[in-house]
Image 1 (tube, rainbow, N blue to C red):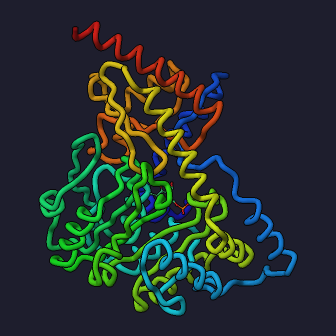
Image 2: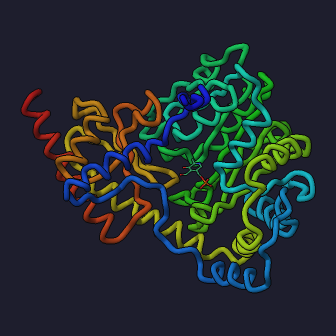
Image 3: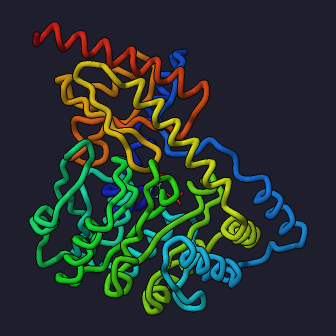
Length: 403
Ligand SMILES: Cc1ncc(COP(=O)(O)O)c(C=O)c1O
């Protein structure tokens, strides 16, 4: 008997760039080659021992039953204290905060609650590639707007956002610090884009997962904090994954107006019903404890960033951009005269190092490579040696062909 076909929408979903490249990596490793990965956005620092103690305590206390589907009240309270402390934003923990299984789940339920079939979602191009599939899953259409490299950083202006607008545009998706490009949007940039959202009555989803990884004394500014109006139209999405090195714990949160949070909770109840109770207890502990580990982590990643920048210095045709935040250096490789994917493949097969081509994040990323400094130590230094060697070979080759 023939099996029923899969739903048509499955054909529209894409594995993330990291997972696509990982499949290739496994193929190369199966041939016995050793590779060094500078690809993933997973901090290699350990979750703080005190947070690990907190989850053990919670388990021993038998906190293993179903959690409050909106999030345990004491975690929502801790989130609201954090949002006021770090972001200057006041949200009611009873009605305006939802605990989610990481930012991934938060974005998913926000899209579920906001999108009608055919609605368009504006987002900068290039951007984190895992936004497109859930937009499509909920019947929407991701529409990238143009960005440019100016004064060594990726940025965009109002005209570019406006050019992508149509009568079907409903939502704007922002990510600051911005993966993969490393820009931390300034207050002036946020005021301009949020004023545009107000004029066109767009809802905004703001993914702030890298908020604590900002460098050279910068501060992260929440789009919702730039005006009263901005707060009313924004869903703030965040998680503990990066800030507390808790990627595998799957815990995050959203903040928005009570009506939207209620709708998102309804959506969440149809799938996960939120993170495990003991995970939520430990998450509340991590948010409330004193935050010196977060500051140390920021210093460590800034030092790693600088190591990557100096390794990529002085190769003709390669220009690293200095990231203001996040876990990645984007290298402008347009001077090598090859597509970013061809360069990535050369580095994988000939130099033994794994990075991601900028084009994986949208056409606007063509001509760049994303180099992660989420892993440090020996892994970073060996990976950078290989990366430098591979890029130098491509550079020498391109100078010979086009002297
Ligand atoms: C911009 C961005 N948002 C969201 C996520 C996923 O976050 P979470 O682990 O909280 O689901 C990632 C992971 O790399 C990311 O880079």
